[in-house]
Image (tube, rainbow over all chains, first blue to last red; front, side):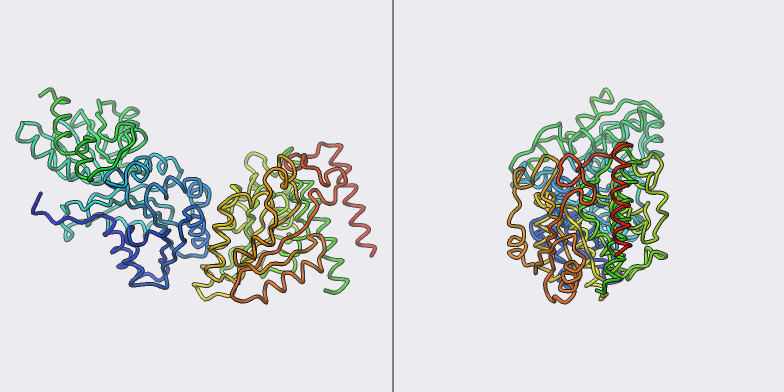
Length: 314
Length: 281
């Protein structure tokens, strides 16, 4: 994919906020001293009077956003995934989730592709934490086109939403002109019958690559982009289970509590089929270049191919 | 404040205290101590200070109140019921299964509750968010929040204080109920928050220290809060935990314990006597 345009979804977040704000006066943004990194700085440049820095105080920021939402504003509260979903979990649970307030949490720097900052900043637990809050929508878009659409869908959705974005520039593979995004709907990128590969975030591009390699090896892989982890598109998962009989999940997250477990729960109850979960294997990351880390942790097209071949007995 | 106004407020505070006892007795649980210490504050806010409409609890331009010390819901429910947001007769359903009067305030279930609270240290942040929103929207409504003196041990409280001062939220008023006791004993022994007034000033607040059971002092403090421009305002109320019920006063054990039938009868008799005394004034 060397010739493909690459954009980090955190940039998509900042750009989408600025685009949305031009149409909607009620959109405001909170950040916690990371506007340059979360890219809400793009929004701030266009709408300085609607951007509020909360300093390095994520718990306060989340509950402040909750209070602003009670007044009819639509706040996007932004930080790194580790400090939004992690540090401020209980504020999100009690001050946004429980009262069902209309706050959007824009969490950038999700997963190990944070890179050199190392494990303290590589959040691989956010899907698990956010999924466990009743009523929370959890999304992890795969590329720039989808990320911007997801931000707009989050704005239109009335209720709490958690959006995860990445630091690393990733290939843009969606065609914006023909792209439609809907919360809770997965996307079949390539049809196939031997195995279904269900991925989200930057693993979708890897799954697409894997699908091409598998096709050459005679394995027909169905590639599904599951940007919304909650509510899960169970219909699409069950269809894949019935038609492919095998599922591989891929996510930049601990294999505990994320997309893999959501898919497992769904098929275990409604259409049991074998599942292989590709993700971070219940361990912490470490410092290194993002791409090298992804490869080392098995979050790559090559590893997906390896797992699929073993899974399909080839 | 005229003497008649003061008498009315004092009578209402007695009724609020009765509501606290009715609620916690009916629940066989709940937090009477900090509800009773704040009875005058609840009464002054809902019967004198705040611009609200019990018939239209979601009125967009109303003043807001966030009970950051959410466990004293029995006090908030008692004042809301007495102010006409819902029937006083419902107070004993506190904490019952299927009652709308949850153990801690739920904004989606109880008319007049502006924010769901219960986890200490978060309500003040939400209140600051409301005050910021009002300023941003060009509205003139004010936001009040009530905290416990134990609650201010939560670090988030000070994040919120910094925020309120940084954004010059002069429509924001934080009230601290300094009754001196928390679950494990005296706040000074558990984890001293003192000096509270100096801390607030250092965080950019204008501060008043008052006797929280004296309506004239409360009136002066809230008037000063409204007159203060460019800064948030803090009111530190020196109070007696369990105020109004002899055996609960200054007893940490009554932080989160309900009166049994016998204790209920004693408490109600004492409060009725206090009410009769006020009415005879």
